[in-house]
Image 1 (tube, one colour):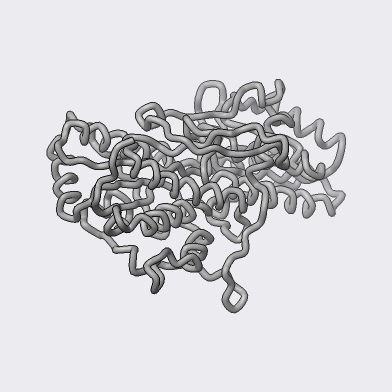
Image 2 (image 1 turned 180 degrees about the vertical axis):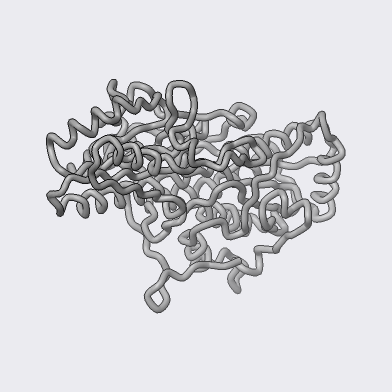
Length: 421
């Protein structure tokens, strides 16, 4: 264990928001304030590393410290239950340190300007790439800092951790919406197909969660299609026919990242082809493509639904388990940095706990961020049924503990009240 460094901390958020990303931010802020004898100030970078480079910083201590110099727990709780990224976000790809050392020299000069010794970055795969590159450069620098990644992504595709903060709340929302959609569709006797498109480029964890109602109360979709296995249109038509033999109203969940065997996206014909700075295509249109195919094949009533942004911003339906774990990830990142850990990401390990419901408990640890960045964790093949059109009960039992518990948002005149930084 190394001695703490006296100096300021900076925290930022990157990538797509979640309903729990601000809980991790609250965890970092609260613990930094508790450690005010070592961490002299807490800065927030607006719009992630992009905003830091432009020196768009906000001092967070005055916003979240009470008159006794302690964390203002009420304000932190309101922040925890606020959706989206309270500090703003970005998608900025950093160069490799060897390719552009001047870029990192400029970064370090800014750290020195604000006496920043602790850097916390909350995000997913691409954000961990930023942490890894910054950590690699600092190993060659004489400026001592501690750099920590705090996991975040609704996609649940980060390596090195049992699951990611944000996923549990998104899964809870998706499962709830699917159950409500199935209830709504079941009231008619006219043949109809409803196709629900769910986020997930390469990993089908979110789409798998759509089947949770099947495990809990039997009111879930007929089929779910994940990107981990090839999508076959003829097999899909056969699935629809078999579902019609059971009931007139068929409900299907499909990942936006569903691909044919040749690698092309199912919805590629309706996509713009635009990509982000990390080379990721903007996905859309999978459900609409399947809607048109079903309409042509069966001539029945068909509708497509994109759950879209509400999957990641529906904080009114957040999982209490997810919010609590996200907060602790932020707290533990600060504790790890103070103890001398750097170039790492906070990770969660699932521990058998027979005394708890679902036998579920989490232990927090750290993982070398260089082993995590730019890798994708997908749904295990053994958790997808042989027909490629659903997930197993084992998969659903693994997800179920993550959606447990309800939060109590702050309300004002009938609407949730959010904390604005």
